[in-house]
Image (cartoon, rainbow, N blue to C red):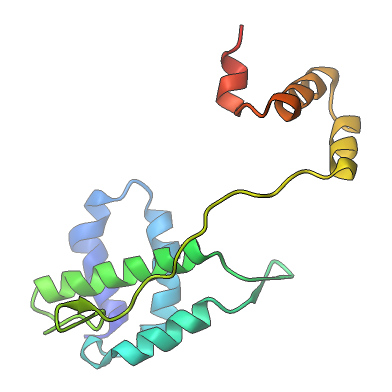
Length: 157
């Protein structure tokens, strides 16, 4: 059985009933299907996945702009791939997952630094305020000066 066929079976028998957003599943699985779709699942090896993990983290052109994917993006793709292969092991379609070796994780996810450290520049603030309507301008100034979240700002009476 190829990985592509395994993904279809996994979706039909398991994921379809658990997912709230099937589009999200297909977008998370697409890179794995592109990389391993034609390969029989019994021939997928740990080294192949490690090489693919490195390739996933490389910069690529998205909508005309070269970007490096976030660590979280790569981790979500790998997690979905691992989940499908573990499901195959549970269904006895695969003797063992290439993600495990001797009961230990053979492939580790990268550390995610999800801290937000982006600050708006003065030029961006000026542009934003000059293009906003008076009501939105007041809300923007309030948000920038206080640092409250959108939901907190809208709850104020």
